[in-house]
Length: 199
Image (cartoon, rainbow, N blue to C red; front, top):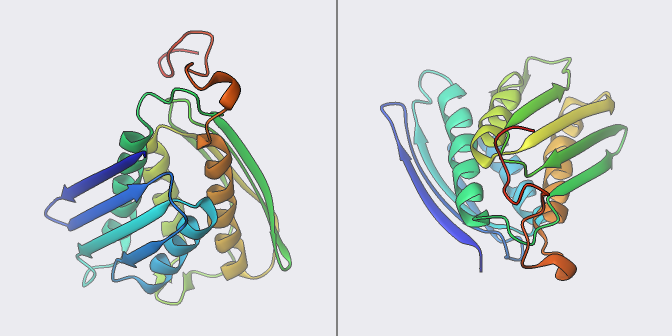
């Protein structure tokens, strides 16, 4: 099974992540940020990755460091668990509705990290969390996971639905991308024979 454990400790945060790519969507998440916990639980449940997160951060300042560093640590665990990427589908996409909101995610496990973020919010906060921090989480995750990641909210009115649809669409896209293709289970999904580097 493809598993990883990562510890990330800085002067701002202490984070531990355990990730199993071949799980059943079991989660155990404690970041100290309630809304972020809720989103990471959605990520686990809908990707079928088992996810355990323990994060302690400088929440007395704000939620920025905890949010960003959690994305970085989960991305590191994802990359380690995925290994050489042999046999994976590599690409994944999802068009996900949540009530009035519709969000599109497309990704490539390319080892060439890049984030396109076409998501706008009409509120500054969801609960106690600044909505601008969601981009920071996705940016941190994409960079360390090695993903080319495109996220676009096509429409929606409710900010909760918009961001939750983004996390769920990411989850479903990851689930497709990391599945093993039985026809090419022994091959790197690239004509170069390796993922990453130049196009």
